[in-house]
Length: 67
Image (cartoon, rainbow, N blue to C red; front, side, top):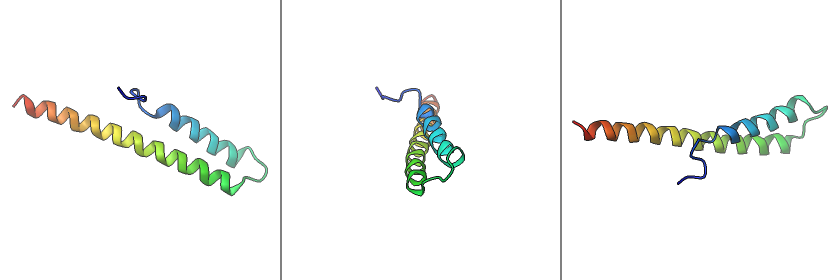
């Protein structure tokens, strides 16, 4: 069973907030921090996309099994 059985949305929300806070709530945002947060956000967006695509694939497999 996956550690993220409910998806990666909590992680996506967390890293989106980190990125937003660094950009908008800092007098002078640090580029290194912004890049780091962006990489983390991109990683979890990719994981969520993979997860959703897998659910679609699994659903299609179940559907074709009944034909």
